[in-house]
Length: 462
Image (cartoon, rainbow, N blue to C red; front, top):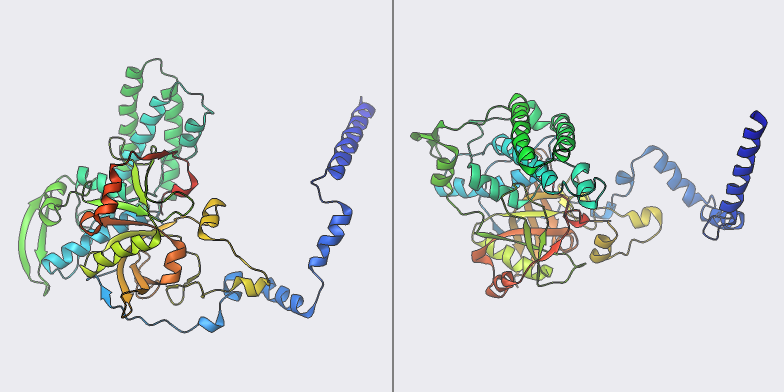
């Protein structure tokens, strides 16, 4: 038996070894000899190799010809106060949406400061996402567990990330509260462990729901499951208030009035916008047809809310709306591929910040369309667009966004991007309808082109 086993291994190894070596697509010995010519051991190659052995690529690729800080003057800037910090959480979409609204409230009431509670809406976001997942499991109960849809659900039952429809649906349903009413906790600022616990429970619940014979039985169980999720959330981040007292102060710090509010009455008094109907999302995705409306299936935060809907437009059309909004002192929800050509020290996003081509003596010629198609780029982070610098002809030279990484990050908590960088790595913008041209609004009459929830271009912003 031992001899047979060894012989079998030898035969299998020989067969598979010969097969792999003779495969037309494999690396043959001759091909390997040719490939090895890529490194000749020249003085230049040795110098680069030595540098790379003890330094990060990000540091060695810094373009020394672009070390000077850009001009920080902006011809048009929205009035804002303060910088927020999402810390170790993926809630940039929520910070961005609330930063747009707080800029309006600060300006309207001339407040010394104002920060909404991100923790309050994060609580309901995670609760609603849990319900969205469990209900989707019930809705797909007849599908095989390894179907594309069910597999997608089980891979990521819940997450911190999101986009603007989450902001609008959650606020219109639950209102807002000041940060002082429901402050952050360790778990709300550091969400990984909490989310992993909730994801584990949701996957367990999914198996139980799929085993139920009737939808009625599954729905009754879902309520019990959400009760447990609610308890875990309250223990991690606190109990969301249903009523609270708040004092408004003027710009000099003098009290103006003190009232008792509910989260919805507070929103209605100080903001009062219909977020679900007053905004549109536009996108610059050259890999898909322009002037078309797209919808992302099951990409929402609230089960009974709205799927993500956007109009795909050329970049110049998007810039026109952005400039009109900034000129009218109105900030916008903005998302991009933030870490491309990012200078952490200067707080700038500039195609000339880094020079990978010179470091590795090669080129990186892909277009924006090709980067999207090959998964080399996509929207990764949301921020608040607050400024543009226009030349005498009204052409943008650079832009500025308010970030949510703290006031010590970037340029005074902001990031400055060149217009060339904007063209290549900007993806989404949420604009009030009053800044949208009539011909673009007319496009919303189209029947949206439905895209699957797992489309890689539409991962949540974090």
